[in-house]
Length: 250
Image 1 (cartoon, rainbow, N blue to C red):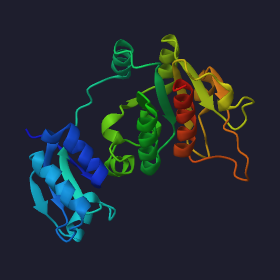
Image 2 (cartoon, rainbow, N blue to C red):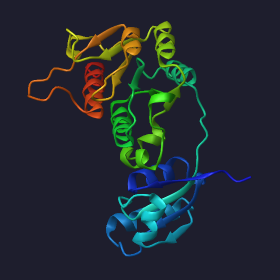
Image 3 (cartoon, one colour):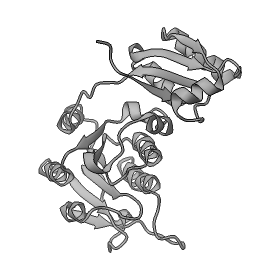
């Protein structure tokens, strides 16, 4: 039986798959009306990877992608099997001595654009994994992959059955669990983030669930100097993750 096919669209998402798992690509559809340098370079890369190329008009590409924001590129791909658990990821990081563990935990992020942006930020800041609960999270789909610009292929995204229990397991591994809350007294900039840490953020509006907040070792806030009360979750993730990266880079 052949593997079920899904789609990726946009230059970044498809290019990363060509680079990391070229054998999983069934075919690449591209808009022949687009003849700029970026498209020419992309087609050359796809040919070098041995991908089957199919000329498709804008209407067909939009139909395949389920979105008009395909940039003239859509790939039909085999879904990649989940090859690791959270324990596997963390064990590999520790065994390869890739530095102190850095995990992003998202509680209640259901918008694929927000998840894609969070994955992109996590990749840029060097996070080792992104964790979310199965019952209150969006899964990986074409929109997430497009927004993530390839990070959906490089950052493990692990959906767990019981988030509070998973946070407890992280604490058993001596990973400091830090949640964000507008009501916290201490700022993210007051903490030493050079130690192994899991940064927990909730969706804008509702924030973290009460049980998630109670499970954290500490709650901190992101200072807000203007009129708005909170940041988009992907922006907040960037603030927290890059503060950890800044401290670890000193």
